[in-house]
Length: 298
Image (tube, rainbow, N blue to C red; front, top):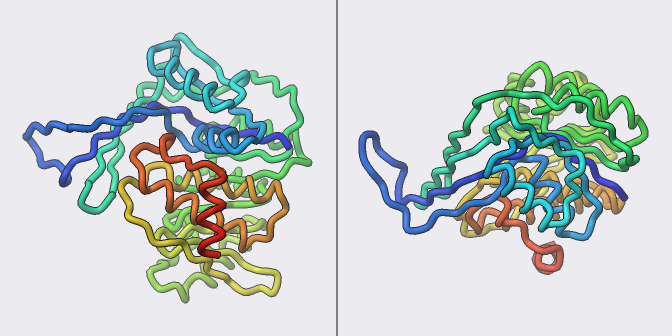
């Protein structure tokens, strides 16, 4: 089973603070965490750590952060042959401020250029493709080329490129915020889920899954009912990367033919566990650890 992940690579520098910073003051951190980040790359790392054959289509600069990212990806076992290393590109760097009082995180990312990946010759036949929407042109080309592959869109940002990709996917796995904006329906009351699901299903003509933060996630079952799959309660430190790792676990479950309830229950646990550590890439638990928690709480 071959997994192809398409999207951004970034380098995350995380600063845990006792409270959210105030203007015009200096703060010192006793702990600074550095690791790679980005939805598609985090997903690829999880899959490789779990023994899967994963490939990443992305772009990094020929700079210190790009080199750190490449070394880290290779240490996880991700196949990096489809990553463009570009001398004219500055690797995305994200400063992540984590509020230790409530585990919320504020991310400030560099956006010095917005170079798009072109002319990638994919010489494997992927079974599952996951995209994060940041590289829309090459994503569509690869979707079109490998029509038999299972296509999954991580829908977080609402823009024309992501919306177009949702129309040609097999699964739209979206955030609560994405569903609220696209459906123009507030999900503070879960009774509105039926309305929101129907709008997205009619719009995209595909399977919809939504993550609901602490409530877990939801899908429509074979009987036509909206099912909310609960998560587990943990002591969170940092939510960075939780959604990325949810998506990695989601496509892992798809590859094994699990039913949707099991996929989402397992993925909820992966996302929840990841919040107990600082740094998205650092919070990938082993498959054995996740299975142990799943067996305890299923």
